[in-house]
Image (cartoon, helix red, strand yellow):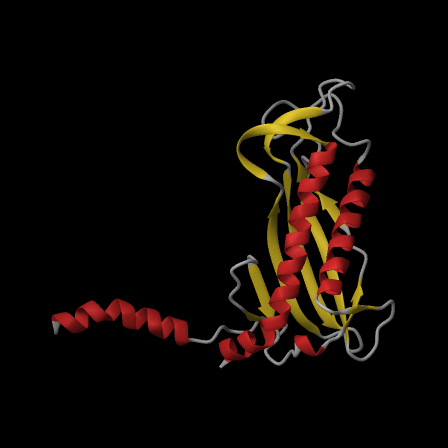
Length: 220
């Protein structure tokens, strides 16, 4: 075999793989490349930019089994929050607020009812883990940690009238991460998740703006 051709075989194989279109999921979605989101799936014929209004559903939050344990030591005597419901409600409000702001900045009109031109967006926060602070006594409100916690976030966009699924996003969210342990409190933990949720919301809205063109190209 020609040595030059042999050297080109890996490149030809990669090119052939790149040219192979993604197979749609059972729901008709196609995986779309994204540098900001872990997984972005879009319906090839979904004209997401054509939607000018958005209907945001309430965000459910599910905690991980070890949500009240510091990751680096024994389980604390006192949980980091008063109870699980308080934590769920607080994180739900953060995500709902950050999503609403991201769509508002992108020019979407918020509405309370389904209708033509209305994009229905449903998000979920799963496996939420809060790393800090660890409570070793009622008087300790700070602890040292490298990150505030983590969660898996799912977002789906549908046509509000037909209910057809247009796009799905799955992403792993990590609260503020530093190279070395830093002081953390309830306030700093909340701020870290607010920043992470805001970035996720902005990335989703940004991806929807170019999703139709990319998805159609990938499906050819």
